[in-house]
Length: 474
Image (cartoon, rainbow, N blue to C red; front, top):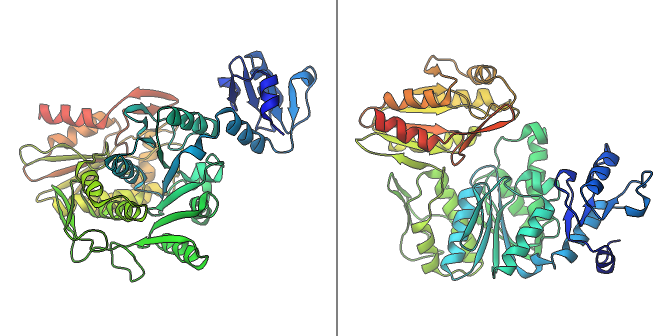
């Protein structure tokens, strides 16, 4: 299909599957059936040495056309040859789930580094090779970008790669060619139904990490407080696969669960896990949702042989931007910025803030445009139920009318415990100005993002910057 000799004869200098990114010397893989001729001609015009496609060659492109029966398989083979099979030289670890992926990936990376490994990290907030970081554009990059990243990681001396595996990337085969040494499952709650259509489809997409991409001798670590995690665990155990179960709620099947109550304060968490350590483990991460994340990653670290001292150092030092991030806690007033943009995530972060709050709890949030509309009224109901006041505003409206999005949110609200302020900066200013001693404010939805998408344009906007500025002016 695609051989090393063929690529040498063509003097291939790069691989590309997006005609807009084609460069001189690229081998272009035409994945589309509709519009394939236009894309192919654009790639050749940009300097591509040849086009690989399942379609027959259009007129005038015969000499630059390689017709194959499976273009995705050809692309994968070419990537392995061109990038010298980098995933065979890395121990790859992935975490999937609706919420908790980013925090878990940060914890995993920290534990590997604490144990002396040089790591690469791929995720929602950033991509990192050793000490060099770049801003991430997708939770999980495309297949060719993944191979290019892995090749750079190998060249830099990395031994391990930690990545967040999105449902889109799993069902689209972006991680094809990787056999993960370990895979973690955090939870499954409503999100991305605009793409997957049903929760069952969404679950089956997540499940692929364990049924298709986990190495035969790889280990799965699953949160079985979530029914979907328990289902995967049961199926893996029945098949004789390596699987470890964790439970914050004390599920009898769990291999790792806390003994006694987990101490939770605004300073962090403290828990005893006799199956991992004799003394209590401490972390500055807050909230029940972070108990889940910490349990999951400690069980994973234990399963792959990371020592206790490295675990302790990692959970004590890790900080995750935009995940229950304390941006203000002076004068008895507390402002938290969190990425929560799903019903479950919003419920978890508000419950955590409520457990710590001595005064009034308020929240600023909106919902993203051009995304799952069904979750909007659910989030509105959660906000009015758990917060004393909600400030309804814009998130990333994209091509939708911000007021129409807010109306969808309001449809789930039965009280008048909210104020509509479409301008997000103004909503943050008003919410901050209303804070008194002992009050907490949760600004939810964007977390680490430093932009707002209006129409198709990104504008600089950072909830953390806006909150600090507002609090300093109060």
